[in-house]
Image (tube, rainbow, N blue to C red; front, side):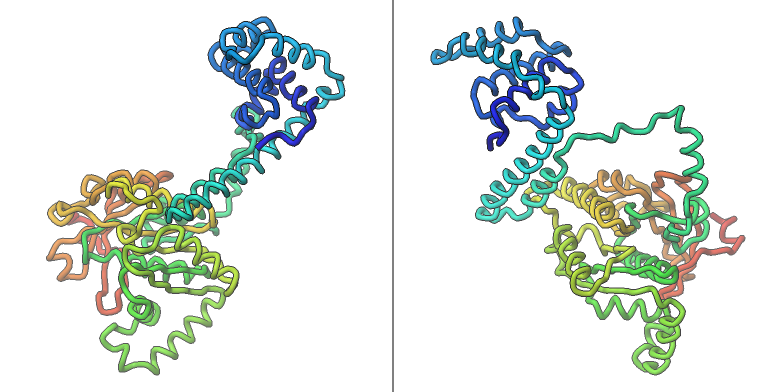
Amino acid sequence: MKYEFSENIQRGILYLLKSDDNFYVELVNLIKPDYFEFPSHAKLFEIINGHRDKYLTLPNDEIILEEARQSLSPREDLSDYEDELTYINSLDTSCVENPSYLIDLVEDFAKKSAMKEAIKASMLLLKDDKIGDIEPLVRKALTVSRNIDVGQSYFPSIKERWLRILSEDFSDRFGTILPSLNRCLDGGLSLGELGMVVAPPGVGKSMFLVNQAVQSLSEGRKVLYISLEMSEDKIAQRFDSVLTKIPQSRLKTNQSALSQRLEKVREAIPNSDLVIKQFPTGLATVNTVRSLLVQLKNYDDFVPDLLIVDYLELMRPTNEGMHEYQAQQRISEELRGLAVENKCLLWTATQTNRQGRAVKVITDSELADAYGKIRTCDFAVSLNQTEEEFDSGRMRCYVMKSRNSNQRFIIPMTVDYSILHMSENTDEDYEDDE
């Protein structure tokens, strides 16, 4: 794709590239040699760019001509470059007196060009049935732009920074089911973050996620619960017990009480909403979830505040052919990206390895297949339980990772398995034992 600008505009860009370092730095990443209409212009850009990269200074005309001489092809003549430099240096000043205009012109062209190239490449990928490779390609094209956010100036911004921090609205935080965690987290987790619960099979990962969803519902949030293992009805049945306190074993025989209690729950949290969606195990990718979010927004006007994915190992990476540890890390990265993209909190669960059942406290050493999957998350806890604790309805929550608060401490928990309810244990004797 070639520049649609006039010859003199292209010469003006080259003039500023070789003479104005600020202009060069701002635009160099948005320019490709094949954008220029004439081969000599492309060659001049390559020389300027190569010299600046190597020596950290812009080349003068003599250096440009010398480097052009050293790389001449049999069909080229140095006089072509000498004449072109003469044209560039004798430009009408109106072509270069407004660098900001040229910057905007080049940036707009670079964005359009990147998207056109991504669309062309996507068509080929679609023919080869490599759908998973299309999304990152298009997302990369959308990021093409000059970066005008230069960051925060530390010393001048002290007052404004602390005013912003101290006036932060903690009511936007998503509380967890454990008060001790909420105190450490200044109220809970935030939009755009990824929380992770770790446990061996059968210890209570899904139960924890359901309780976490109920906590957010009680705060007036909208929740999307994605199950990759259990059916929608089975997950809904868990919510029935946690919300109404009716034991799982009595739900079928207490339909009237269930309806009445759920009506009261609905009255108490009128702004909350819950959608439960099941995808086949091992078939759903992050793109599958992304498509569901678009459909819910367009057809049901439903935009979740909390997204729960139950659970990580049952997802499929968008890029096939990875080792298991690479795939799990990639999925974790994609889930956090999804949370940022959709401005929601995302909770997921992950398995431990076999050693997870043998240790008293599960740490990151017991993560199944991929240590890297915890790197991306903002907050991670493990659920720990001995046989004796299971029999007495107790459990220990260990804070494995927390970006912005204390970590590596244990919170005793109580589990009522009849209604699938989890809560923090305030029994001092139990805490002393631990």
